[in-house]
Amino acid sequence: MGQDYQQLVDRLAEKTTGELQDGVEVVIKPVPDRTESGVLDPRVLEVMMQQQDSSPAAPFSLEAARAGMGWINTDLTTTPIMTEAIEIPSAEQPISARIYRPRSTELLPAVVYFHGGGFFGGTLEPVEHPCRLLAEQANVVVISIDYRLAPEHPFPAGLNDCFTAVKWVYEQAEELGINRAQLAVAGDSAGGNLATVCALLDREQQTEMIQYQILLYPVVNLAALSTDDFKWRLDAYEMNENRKLLEGIVTALEDTDGLLNRLYLQGTTDVQDPHVSPLFSDKLAGLPDALIITAEYDYLRLEGEAYGRKLARAGVKTKRIQYNGMDHAFIEKLGQYPQAEDCITEIANGLKKRFATTQPTGG
Figure 1: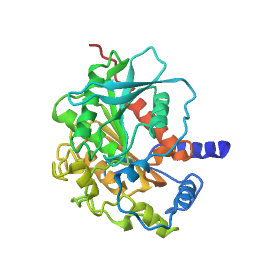
Figure 2 (figure 1 turned 30 degrees about the horizontal axis):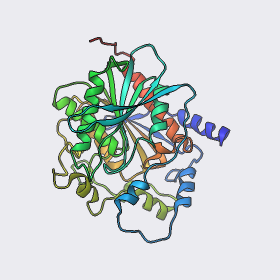
Figure 3 (figure 1 turned 45 degrees about the vertical axis):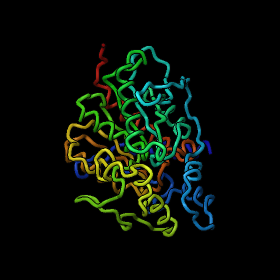
Figure 4 (figure 1 turned 90 degrees about the vertical axis):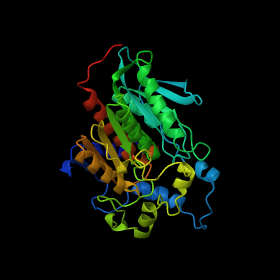
């Protein structure tokens, strides 16, 4: 793959600035080796062809769904990144986490990272290499959180773990070698939801700890309910070849029978509660600057776009980067999809830009 792969990474890196759309700076990254629009990236197509299975869909099994999550990826770091497993104290039960740290004698910015998995699955493993690469590229300490999962621990258990972890990192900043004035949250899919809801809680409780939020193809509207600015529709996706395959990819995450609601909420709260579906929040003003990453052929793309517009309307500085030809969860294909590597670079650039002017604070 070597040289060709690197050329594709380089080509993606050429496009870093975008145009303002509804107050959001939008960067559209093209498929690096296709000139046409409305097409799947060749590497995604290859993976899809390998995965195609003609057997009928089996009824939902929690064990099978969890086992099928995650993707083995590649460690692309070229410098030593120290990795440490820790337990974060919590009133309910200790929260397992991993710290990824570049070599440094200075206090570094920190990113508290929440993995994806629909609130009921996912582990620290698939995001280990992305977190390591982010630590290296951005020169930040990354703390990846193994929060509790539904249905064994329904809402708000996982969210409570995430916010407890943010508070702990903020409070222990000096001991952790972190500059507490430079704290970001990040997450993919369900983890993107947890990251932005932590930012909401931070502002609601007036703790003002979080300065930047990085949301990779986030879940922000749990039941995909229509709003005045959002309506999910298939014709919003441009499909100029492999239409049947593309439709299948786009609708793969459609939750037609309210499964997430049953597993995650279990009747504890309304699906439009902003702590579940932040797209319904009317308290977005004052939230930290946001970087939203979307994939062209992802069911969650349209709600991610809508959330970006709503943040911008509330006065939150927002940038959205869309990777054309990509499907959901592409960050886990690090080393296989050049877009995953470029995405980490873009996140690192966003962090450096955001924290370039923040001075370390003591005490």
